[in-house]
Each structure stands twice: as structure tokens, then as C-alpha cells.
Image 1: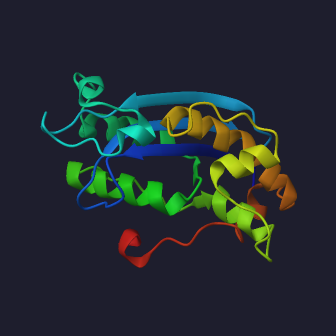
Image 2: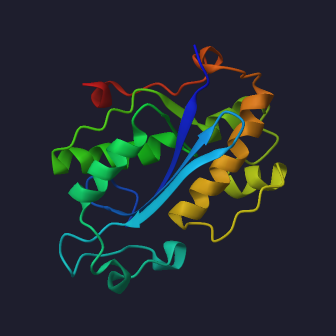
Length: 193
């Protein structure tokens, strides 16, 4: 096995329910095992209807006005699929991001396979079996002296997650792709069909 490449993703959404809420912004940072950034990409996702709710603006800062003219979900998800090709889907709380992306992709009729999932939240928790530490993204960034700018901006969160990833992988002794097998997050049965 060779050196893996990681597609570190963060989504900002209009809420927490994959059935009622939508993706508003996607950020992606592609990195090598050592943390070298290969690519960065971010986009807002246009609302289906102009009166759609954007959810907790106090958290993500995204307004309906900002989403006017943004590409719609099918275009964004097709681009995301292409950018994820060959990389390991990685996120802080990977299940949240994966569920939103797969639900949006299904609505758009786009297949985005996310079989290999790596969760930096889980990697951090595995290093703290007695649960003595907090494992939110801001907490993990502080532990590894990673700057987290504009928390809850998708690209900023993806950059921060990508920056802590090499620290977490090193702590788990990962030196090549074979070492990741025991660390992947399981794919829920409904998502694997």
C-alpha cells in the first residue's frame, strides 16, 4: 500500500436534521499523510427556494443574501464527487458531514461513495480512553497549537481539521495506508446500500 491522500471536509448546514435541513457551505482541503496541502476548495450552496431558512446564522454567519447566485446542490455535489476521488473522506465528526452529503447527493441523483471514512473526533477520543479531555474541534486545535480561524466557516474548519490530522495520525502510529484499516469509521448499513 502507498501513501494515502485525505480529503478533509466540513459542511455548514441550516440545521441538524438531514431530512429537514440543507447544506449551505462545503469546504474541502486535500492533504498528504504529512499534512502537505495539495488542494483547497470551498463553495456556498444555493438554496432551492429563495425563502428557505438558513438556520442558526449566529453560528455559521451565512445569510440568504450570501447564497443568492451560489451554485445549486447538483453542480456543487458533482464537483465534490470529483474532488473526493481516490482520497479518504475525513472530517471532525465524520458521520454528520457524510450523512448530509449523501442525503443531498441522493436528492440530486449523484452517487458519492464514502466507504473509507476517517473521523478526527474519533481519533482524538481513542487517545483519551478515560475521557479526561474535551474533543471538540476548537479543543483539539488548542491541544496541537493549531489556529482555528472563523470557527463554523466550512473552509476554515476543514483547514483546521487538516492541520490536526497529521498529529492524530502520528499519535496512532500511522505511517502508510495499511495502518488506517483499524481506524476507519464504520459505514452505516443504510449508507452502504
